[in-house]
Image (cartoon, rainbow, N blue to C red; front, top):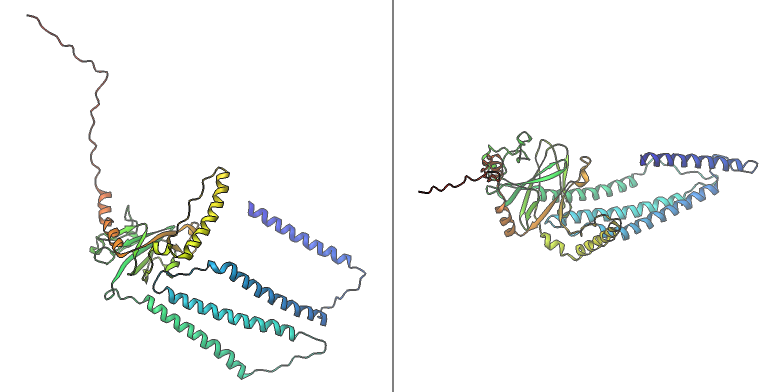
Length: 383
């Protein structure tokens, strides 16, 4: 209803502005006006200066954006390959800024310098081989360099030899609207799975007839060890999702009917990342905003917001439905010793299924004395 009212108000405002322009035209009746459709020298001069004005606005807004929103850029990658991704991104941004600065300056300057004047004629020539070579070769060389570096970084990230490398295999299972993690257990091999096997506590469809599935373990949080390569295999139950872990510079689509994967080595535990001065400053600013919001909530009788604490997150980066915004899972990076202890304490999926399917123990009857019962009288016989 609110949206409809907003649309109606905007339409009425547009009609009102249109009527005002008609009234303004009527007030000009009898006055000398320049009604020709051909631009005069004065018109062209005004347009030329307007081009310079727009150029100034473009640069001022760009500088403003860098100052205001620049600190919000996510830095401090928490994975080994993160520095390569950030370097590639920074090189790309730098090239974009340089090219944008030069091309926009030339575009607006030439629009002013060669603005139309009375009796002037444009110089026409069909082509210029020298210019064609220059403006074709430079972008081709720059783009080729970026693509080759990107392919090099992507190959280093994606190439994983499960047989030779010491990796931890974990499955991330996506569904509307949440995530589940499955660990491969002692054999480091995930059991087969299919949505047809989803039943009861077996919420990711593991084929329990597969010997490799007997030691698989489930978790609603993704625990991973620092300094160890983690191979994350991804499946989707329903629609296309995208597993996005921004702090690790990791993202991969989760496609129904197929398994995708992404590997990385965490370099900072959750506690170590929280202790980074920049992160501490960001968290302090967030909690300052939340405190101000909480004051307003409590004043109106509502529940205050809890203080925010940093955690790595696994997010969905595809618009997958109404609750897409809330589809996230906590990622915890710990030391390798802590990880081994945590995983050892987790029950296997086979144990969970066995416990869920175990027959309920018969209830033990409890004897309750009847308060209404009357004790039999004791009769004493005299000789």
